Length: 352
Image (cartoon, rainbow, N blue to C red):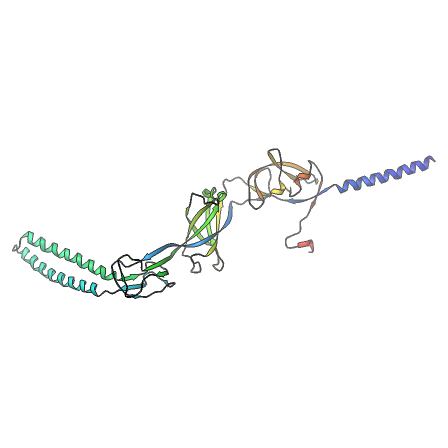
């Protein structure tokens, strides 16, 4: 009878130990691990921008007159020095011819007076009056020649004719805007950046612009940053191209502006997802996975949180550590865990 009792107790004990081991195995947490990634010496951020022409120019004649010819129409692309329009120059030519005759006559007269002056047959006062009169007439002749040249209007730079405001045979005054001209000799990029980026402006290092069909990134040069934010707390930044941009970039086109910033200091920093970080009181921690499959709580210092759900860690971790990526709030100090290997992005489902 006693032997049967001993056998029954032995069976019960064996079942109890087996169930306990099985029960304990079910409570081993499975975790995903991640290695802290080192932040490079430079950070790149992209923003949507727009191409703008450096200047909108109102073009007009420097002298009044009747429009004789207009050689361009709205939308035409012209190069610097191209003839755009001209006035009727008949009266201006007559003015130049009349003064030229007077000038030639007076020049001959001054030459005779100079010979007489050298022979001391003419007083100094008469000689000086004659030479002064010749100089004055030369100035008037030059003014009339300039007015004759001003009857032709040339493109001051490469660009597009946006508007033609008059027609041939119409009279215009000096300075009246005959054309509205878009200067494309120097294109600019404007974009709006958030407060966080504006605060890092001292660390801006390089700028690049890219757009569909343009090809490689085009280097840019900073012109200005408006120190006043708009209603959306955005700051307007304006840049120009280091080299002459391709013709494919036209005013009004949307582009991507890349801002390259240098690190604030030489201290090595790391990046971790916010899901790996948990707080206790005012301090932040992560779980470090050890070689014996246990986890250890490690305090970290967060320098900033990024909009992509990541955090920049300035101390507490290094690139050789393995950090629990998710489920940090459910672990305990020294707890044993089971790491789960993540499938490669090129091996979805672990089929390879």
